[in-house]
Length: 241
Length: 218
Image (cartoon, rainbow over all chains, first blue to last red; front, side, top):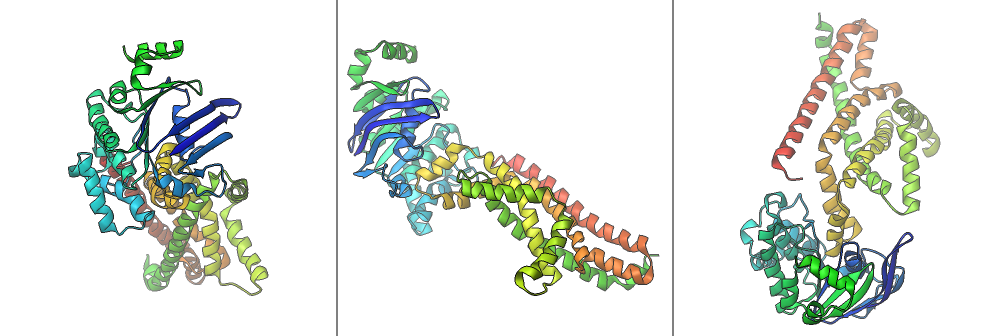
């Protein structure tokens, strides 16, 4: 369980997050949407300790990030993260991208890590690209390798930061299908995305953020059919055009 | 006309061997230290950043020949006994060249996006592991042409070690010259040797540049 309690964050004088409260239970899929600059990505980065926050508390499985003694590297092993621009290691093949952390962090033997990586590449549908470098993969293929790379550490949680917004339209589906399968298999997921079809299919809760605050939350039907704030109505009318 | 070179060929080639040995030590040590200096120059920890930045700024603004000289005369005071020219030269070169390699690596690290590093952290890799497996290899590949150029400069600069009596190629050419007074032939020969080495080096730099552009890997 991830508990976010009254978290506020500033970049200098600029407040990017204001009193965020949210609890994500095991097995839930939470979709975060909102206009750009609303603090969605920053919130994800705070949860796995990539960005510090100045107020409040984030607790992951009972471990508070406020504790200066907490091992952030250990914490990150159980929270996978997928980025908008894939961020594959350009000098390594797809297979090496996936096996690096299991070999170096988990100290798995290379053979075991590679077997596991091949299973994962099969699961995301591109085992034949195992020995290709990222530069020779399409955007959709790169993003699926990135998902496999995160899954290789067997995380308890997966965070997605606009995983399809850098993709050409015809590649969005192949990535969303992988994410939908994951959600249905019971992975706990936190997804920043504007893909409302994905939200409708798997989201247990939708959070709408604006200017660093959570301004609405609810199920897909509640949010979609009956948005409470003008800001959310404007946003929905824009993304549904 | 070049008979003076042929008659002393073995002696001169022994000098080339010293030059090559010094270059290898200077490059291996300088590049390795440079990787770390480059990281330190991007560190957010003030107790890492300021001392290393001071070291880099100081050495980049003094002539190498003074560093070689100064080190050779200071070391005996520090360690309490005379030190051979070769180890003294090796240490001077490593410490000096690491500042130049450090700036090349720093530029290389800065081409790596913040989120690529975050991606590595998010799988549980530590700062040191991320440096070792992600930042350094990527910076190394991206900066390879600059690293080769700086290596060529280092190779040429090793001739400065002759001021502390290191018997490298230039020093040996001048020893023979003192006996036989054939300056043009001897120093002309030394220049040719440097030219051949450096020309091959710079061609290979071009080759790597083309290759990495074609392979489109980085």
